[in-house]
Figure 1 (cartoon, helix red, strand yellow):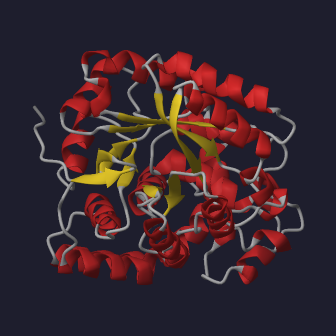
Figure 2 (cartoon, rainbow, N blue to C red; figure 1 turned 180 degrees about the horizontal axis):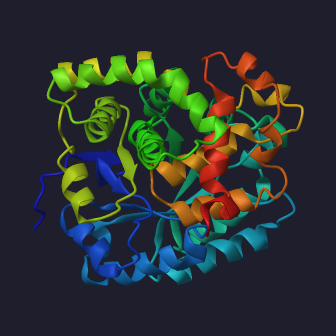
Length: 402
């Protein structure tokens, strides 16, 4: 029996928990079992998560549970040169790794353009996988656009997918800072009876405490701060002092309460089915699942309004990429910021560093002595130059001593 009374929503004809499980940080079947026992019945994975080992982990962990009580989504990246047979084999391989009888949803992972969404080879492969009972539903995930690889915006991708008519489920970015695009998409998904799951729901993801700890450590040890850290310290000390006494007035402790308010905000939207959570430890199971079914409060609203006003320069909007066109070095700025979100907010340090390393020379090292035209192009006033320096320091293996 579940220790928590999770809120349940209709989901492609399936009753799904409003708190779902993304990739758990502890690669242990017993940890995943403890999440499921407490009422989480939506599991999201992909081959890219631990080279298929997360799929295998799920397959092993669910053996003691009734298969029909769970909804499992896995995702595949489809390249334009792939044939329908290639894509079919990828789906079949995911099915074999999960070893769960069937895949509830197989999703097209991070398509860059509408042409990828309309790929007839993908549709042909999905049709075959469904006919054979390997896959039940077709999904799509989207982080948004990057000018550097000529990709389309998240709303263009998802609206195209809606129009195509064969997608049943979307995984998208939605939070209280970046809301207009997603809210329009969510409303349209409701109209077309398409299920919706969310990622990147906490826009600041512990940025304040992580940066504050780094600065305090340099100060305490009497060490010379890197220039990017000095800049952050000088620019934002006043903002820190202004923003966080507000939280104390309401008995708020900091990042955890900001996170909770952020999740309650998105769950308050009736067009949202489930929020994907990266569970890091047993305390996370307790702290996140207590949010299930809870309602967005006046205090929550005050928190997110204050954070939006005071901390907006800290957040590079996911699924944006509006600044990238002016970058003289074609650096994938928004993508790097996303990798840093994995590093800081989700504590997936190794994964984030591997992704960053895959960029090779096309990383933020090119930004060190740049006059930052990206900042002038940003409509949200984000101090991109400083944030890129933080990301480079976090994600560079050589700088991290890994």
